[in-house]
Image 1: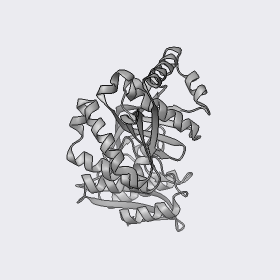
Image 2: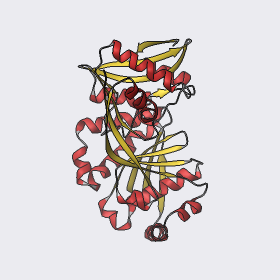
Image 3: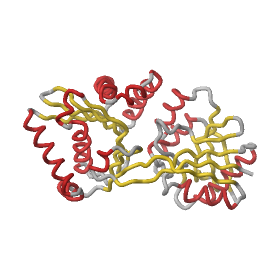
Image 4: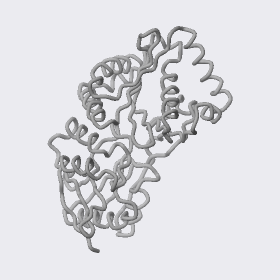
Length: 326
């Protein structure tokens, strides 16, 4: 097979993404360079990084962003902050890339490959695991959490019709009730300059809305959130939303806008306004905004919270896999 493989840096990956982002399958959002660089900075600054770039006839056909440690290779990231991951591969080149990746790992005496948490339609599940099994490797997969997502119609009214009658009635009733309370504003933050003010509002409500979120927001996690928002805003990928009642924030969403999908990464609300259902309404109005901007999918991401089902989310069963190489 006429391919070659080189080891590159995260800086190289960032530059290549900016220059050649349309040439490869840069999915999902959690493997984009702005995300990987921030994760690396906060959670593995001294780890050995190996950005494996595979070329065929001089053209890059795929990239594996790897962490190497003690005979194990893993995709850069962690389940608490990167909901699901995958390799970056040009369409039609999956088999060639996977074979080159396995050859590279063998040359480096890597015994274990951990692809992370993956979707059933990921390149990992469709191409890596079958090829690894055929090569004699032991593949161990177990169910992880579910992720929920919603394919979107072209109008808000069509979306409401996709909900069951009870939930459709509830969304409309809650919106009317909120509108009766006062002036409603839903404003969006997408530019880097507005990120600090947005984060102060979001983080305050994030920790106030649920005890588990307050416990999750360690100084390390907070630093990651702050740098991630700025990094993603630099490339037009941030979509922070603030729901206001009479010009006072009552709920906020930390979301990302990439290609035809909006990803709901996290959210928070003011407990003093919880009787107005501002938490679920901030998500419903984000879906409405997503539809009106012509997007095709809303990704609620990991977790089986009830509101995701109420708003029409469909389950995607995630898998966590480990490959023991021969």
